[in-house]
Amino acid sequence: MRPKVYVTRLIPEEPLKKLQQNCDCRIWDGELPVPRDVLLREVQTADGLVSLLTDRIDATVMDAAPKLRVISNMAVGFDNVDIKEATKRRIVVCNTPEVLTETTADLAFALMSAAARRIGEGERIVRSGKWKTWGPMILLGQDIHHAMLGIIGLGRIGTEIAKRALGFDMKVIYCDRDRRPEMEKKLGIEYADLKTLLARSDFVTIHTPLTSETHHMIGEEQFKAMKKTAILVNTARGPIVDPKALYNALRDRLIAYAALDVTEPEPIPPDDPLLTLDNIVIVPHIGSASVATRTKMAMMAVDNLLAGLKGERPHHVVNPEVLAK
Ligand code: DGY
Image 1: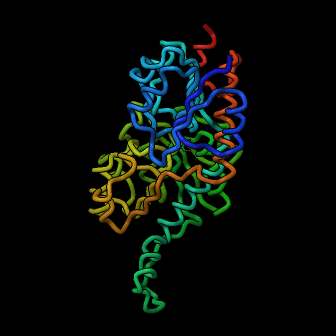
Image 2: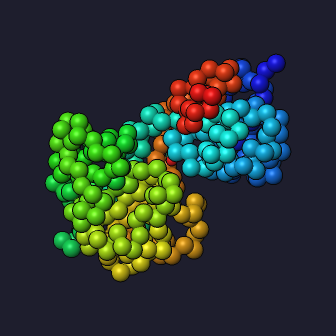
Image 3: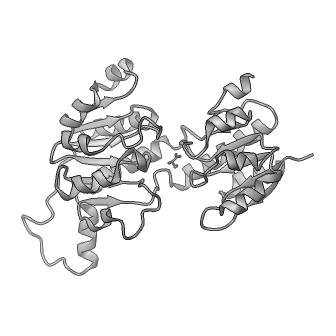
């Protein structure tokens, strides 16, 4: 019998076709995330689930899904899935690392440039008809070249950021749970603890997963430790930065600017105080949003799911202990 699979949003055509050739698929084709009651109903008969970071896959969903064997999350991050509960039920959880690394690093760099050179503000001035002349003092920003970049989390994306930064003649320091001497040597970058990194960096970019340890790891104390000219970039997960502390820091000019691809909550409500500030640029979680990368992510999610349903080892398993049992 063909396995039954529920897909929580429309995914690119080619991976979807592959899934449909191998499984009986039901798909939520709405523009917004699948409503909770629909998800709870649809998983009742599902052997496999293709989920997104906008879906909370917790014990309640798993309890409603007695046949569920594989959750394939189409994202590298999997903080939306309760891994402990999945492991308890021997449900394999998969993610989609690697394929989005460079695309996300590209966006982090774009955001860094947008903040440093005040691109959002400039665009608003042009569109509102307020651009009257070239002026020696108009919209002065900061240079990226030769500046100090602090990378929090030297994983795959953090490493790609470091490579890009070197192309801009930046000096790079990083902090991480584990020191990476081989990367330090290869890229000519330096290790620093978080406090030192914050104090020395002109740009701070976050590339660490969201866990209980990293939740609000950048808050009031950290903003006070940063340079007043510093620019903070977050393309990882919104809740790594305390949004109230960020608002205060930007308003009181404890730091100069922030550039966010991720917010807490998502989407950021239109009346969020952060949106009243000029010294912030925010885009709607588009780090991996290139045609090629989203297609690769969906294909990887499908391949992971199909392997798991066949009882094979998927390439990217988050809780391998389930397979070991
Ligand atoms: C991820 O994959 O975790 C990104 O946030 C979205 O691509």
